[in-house]
Length: 458
Image (cartoon, rainbow, N blue to C red; front, top):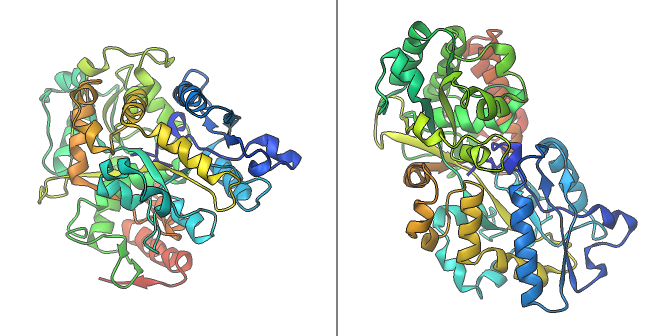
């Protein structure tokens, strides 16, 4: 979950606890032992402020339960890349380190390796609720040293959204459930022929959309190839080395190439627009301009009352299908999951108070409220089993069920650079500037640079 990816998730959901601007005056998070300083990455879309409301409610609960203790929020508006840079700068000094940070699982190992985060195992050992968290989510917050550095607050999954109206016009079934990649491409080609005034298929690509290209598209393809099998197709855990391109990697690039070469996707300038994710959610899907979107579980957050992009009819007008594996091989479908974790900086002034705040956020009731508010996927077993959660929103059960078929990125310290190399390869085949073979060779070269030559061939 997305992240959310997670860096792969839309800006509306990329929230993070970071040091407050007030600490720049020299106070530091430890200046007041009774105040836990919390700031979050506020959405740049003024109409979508889900985290603001949620945190305000938690602050009220926390201060009531802990007389004399205070929670201080300072919202920070920043694009993703600026946020990550600011966060890491703040974590370096006790003067600016916050008491709590909201870490994307895609970057957490970089901060662990840099010594910026505190292991939470002593706290978790005394917290009974930790037993309710699913193992895959716990793993996403673990360092290579086996210690846990974050408490996950939800996850996400990915699948295929499709317009039933466009499918009807194209003569395609509105209960569509593709079994192979070819089924997806065939449907897109049919839409292009029968409904020529819409975009048949959107798959994110290239550097401008960052991790959305890597995770929402490329890894959704790669982890559904024979390269995946029982192993991670990007990282070899046995040798602790990154994996050079194989047949599945090239086939995944070829899928992206096909979409844009056959003009089954958006115009290339639109596909490489950093705002394309906003257009998919706020314009193309609601206005019936897009046939199929390979995208995340969180999209309905943008369509809820008060979002500014209300679309109450979405559950009637859109269908959902799992992304199939390449040839329909077991398990037949694939998903990727990201997510965010609450972490305590190594230089936090009030770590104990910070964990008490986490415990308040992560009660069953509060976790359930958050999952529902931000269209998240539960990582607590007791919430996932609660009918009130499963029935809260159309699509929740569909995307929660995909957790059984999901994969997590190999989010080791080199991953952000590996991800950028994937985006460059994708962009090369999208624009037609590179063949699949050239893009794959370029990736292999960049992989060696990004990982200090820690590369293995399978």
